[in-house]
Structures are given as C-alpha cells and as structure tokens.
Length: 561
Ligand code: LFR
Image 1 (cartoon, helix red, strand yellow):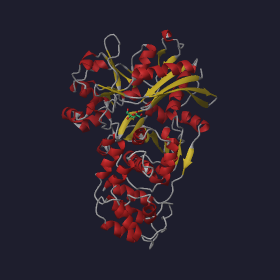
Image 2 (cartoon, protein in one colour; image 1 turned 90 degrees about the vertical axis):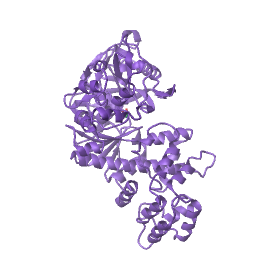
Image 3 (spheres, helix red, strand yellow; image 1 turned 135 degrees about the horizontal axis):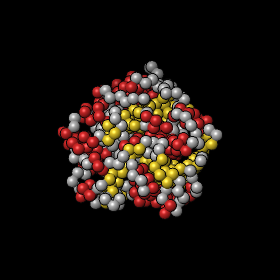
Image 4 (cartoon, protein in one colour; image 1 turned 45 degrees about the horizontal axis):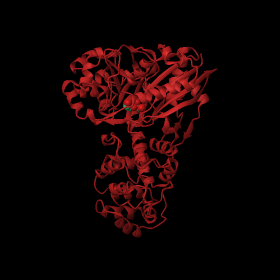
C-alpha cells in the first residue's frame, strides 16, 4: 500500500500524478496533464466538467494499479444532481458575472458581521452562498436534489458515493465554523434548501472503491483536503509553525496556519478568511489576485515565450507602474491589459511624477535625485513620452541606482526603457497592449508591473496575517507554480523583508498523496511529520531578501495614496 494517484484540478489545467511513499520518502510523477478551458454558452461561463472527467479517467488508466485515489480542485463551485443522480447542466465558473450585486441581497438578510462570526469566511463575490442566491428560482436549481462540490462530484462518478468533504465545504460560506456542521438556519433564511447538501466527510476517510464498471481497477477513493489550497498547505515543507505560506498559482493564497479561527472585526474588515484545514487546522489567509492577470495577458498576447518575457521583466525598471491587485476589476477573464491600464489610470493624478520621486529617493545624495523629484512635481498629469524625454535631458545620466541595480530615472528615460516614467501609468500600459507588431512595445514592463504589484500584495497580506493572528513569521514558503518564477520569488522576499523558501511546485499533489498515504498506513504522524518527508525529498530554493526596504514602503504608499 504505497502507490497513490492524486487528481489535482486547477483553474487553468488538470493533472493526474502518481506518488510513491516508502521509507519516509515520497516521489511524484505526472501521468496526465490536460488543459482546463472554460466554455461560455448562452452568456454564462461554464467549466467543461466532462472534458475534465475524461482527463481524469485517462490519467487513472495511465497510472496503472494504485492503492488509493485522492481528488482536489479549486473551491466554491458545484454541480447539481437531479432526483436520479444525473448532472443538471455544466457547473458555472466562479468568474461568471451572475453573482454581481448578490452580496447586497445576502447582507440585507444576514448582516455581514453576523455572517463572518458564523462562517469565518472572507467576502469573495463568488462564494457558493452568493452563487446559490444568484441562481434562486432557476429551473435547474428547482430541479436539484443534491449539490456536490467539484471534487465530490468526480468522486461520485468514480464511486457512486455522495458526500461533502470538509475543507472544501468550508469555502461555501454555508458551514458553521464552530460546530463544523452545515449552517441549516442560514441556508433557510436565504431560501437555500439544506436538503441539497450531503453529509460531511473528513479528509483522511475512505469514500469507497472505484466502480468496477469503469475498468480502472477498484482502488479506494480517499477523501483528502479536496480544496486544492488545503492540500497545498499540507504540502508546505515548513520546519516550525512560524511560517507564512503563499500557495501561488492562478490565485495567491497568503496566510498562516492556526489552531483556531480569528474572528475579530479587524480580521473581517481586512477580509481574512478562516478556511477549514486538514487535521483540524485553520487556514487563515487572504485571496490575492495571483498569477491570473499574467496568465490572461499571456493569453491575449498569443502565448509568447514566458521565460524570455520574464527576463525582459527582470530587466525592466522596478516600480515603473503599480496596480492594486485587490481590485475586483481583475476578476473576469479577457481584456486584461486594458483593465490594467484602466485601473492604473484611476491612480491619483501625477502618478508618473510620483514614480520619479520615489525612484529619486533611492538615488545617492546629490546625484540628481532632488532634481528628479522637483522636476517630477512640475510635470502635468498624464503627459506622454516627449515630455518625459524633455525631463530626461535635464537629468544627469548614470547617476547611480541606490545600490539595487535599478537604473536612475535619467538612465531609464534616456534609454527609452521608461518612456513612461513621467507619463501616466495608463498611457504606458496602453502602449504595452498594442500587440506584437511593434517590437518596442514593452510587454516586459507590463509583466514587471504585475509582478511588482503582486509582490506588494504578498507583503501586505503576510504582514496583516501576522498582525491579525499574532503569529510571528520567520520565513515565507511559496508553493505551487509561482515557486518556479524566480523573479516573483525574489521580489516577494524583498517586499516582505523575509527569506522565501520556494517549492515544491507540486505541493498540492504532494499534500493530496501524503494524506492518502497516512490513511492507507504507508506513513504516520501529524502534519509536521508529513512536512518533514517533503523537506527530505523535495527541491526547495531559498531567496534572501535584498536591501532597500524603503523602496517597497514608498511603493506601498504610492498604491495606498
Ligand atoms: C485556488 C482556489 C482558492 C479559491 C479559488 C476559487 O485554486 O481554490 O483557494 O478561493 O481557487 O475557488
């Protein structure tokens, strides 16, 4: 009993991995990877759930004989079954716009502070509670007899068993945090039928054997942390409890692991969430927009070579443009460059000037920093590159970079790298969105804008998590696909002023496998024992924070202004 299959569905791709757990070691192999491409029909954005299920079945066939199967996916979304157990339509994507305006309806019935006290969840417009209120009265919901979260739906197809795995159920905002049971009264008050929700099951319990009719053997399907973030946090190779994690993929889930929830008013206002974790832990975290804006830009640009783009981004000026990634404007798919532009345009006027001023703070004394600042103050709002060039002529060149390798304002303006340093951020990003025809288009600068802004958002969430929970943090673990992004990892270390430990990339699949292995008896112990196995066997890259904390503080102030 040592070979397990992890089915791990992310918002942009799915995979089936085979893990072997033996003598305190774990190895992992991908046997099937497939795209997860949402489909819009009739104006609604859906998940292609049958396509995903096909990828799962193919993967399980390729995996060969296994001793267990665990399934995890993104949270909050669900499928509805009719009285015969048939799926009623394709599950709706949480990024669909149907929940717009629903939060107000819910809060007119249950005050937001009461909802937080009951469920401990941050207010995300797409939480299951809002999706169900948005769907009220639709024939589909009327006909539904059972609601299954995505991993539970796949487990149902594989085994015929229904249930609601606890970690993912905790993301619905319909679970009573204290009792750990469905919040029936809350549901009823909102017109949601409690009978839709199947019994809860704990991670680490056996769901049932795979139906023999599927032709892939009859291994047990084991409930794991079926919310991908729950499995990812199991997969954080932390050596003590003084760590923050960033599960970084389409989202960045940034927080700490606690024994009990934080339900203070400050926590609610900071929109921190208390999600249920494996072994009774609490994932105290905040959703940060993550790599989604970058993924969307790449899609818009026709999937250019990411490594080359990241090199351009690394060479682009720091803090050339910043956006507040918490802005819900970034939630829906499509037109990402334009939306980045739009938001940066909403920044206070004189933004380009602020930029010059903040860079100038880093210039060595007497090197022209004062002049940069004073010139920038005089710049009118939102002017273009020619005015920037004018400014650059008046700035001394090669005036030094304040020790962080960033060129001075003058250098940037003269080399054209920062033709927008004195233009509005919006204008600069607009140029960047112009497409591939103009090779001087600084896509690298757009990517840098996203990564600088993401590192800043990481900094804010790591700090807030500590302040609000009282948990001291010595290091930040980045797991998931983002752990591969060296620039992001380094910027996050710099922004947080803490070492970043990056890896494993496949933390979610590993967390999934280790929980199964424990259930099957291939390994024993608590989460720290599972994490010790990861430290022994997984590649982890350490990034030390580089100096110039002042620059990050200044950048943060710019965003908050
Ligand atoms: C990450 C994740 C987040 C959740 C978001 C939407 O994949 O599961 O934890 O907030 O997706 O479901």
